[in-house]
Image 1 (cartoon, rainbow, N blue to C red):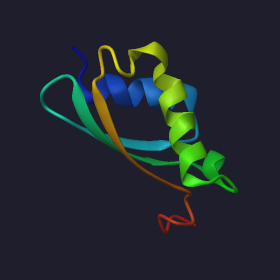
Image 2 (image 1 turned 30 degrees about the horizontal axis):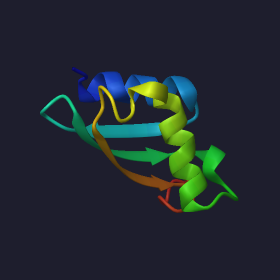
Image 3 (image 1 turned 180 degrees about the vertical axis):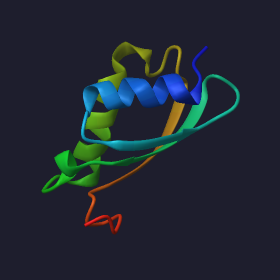
Length: 79
């Protein structure tokens, strides 16, 4: 089972510039808010794929569900 902190660490390893918040309390279903400059110029589907890629084969196996909200720093008002 994964904790929100372990999911956050995995995402930040793959997207080092990201600000990541992860919530979830059952070890398999999570919600994440990911803000990254790497998302600039990319559509929402591509942004989500980038996050899922940081989790690799864990998605759909150990991690059953991950609800994502992705945005650029500008969209998040962090500019």
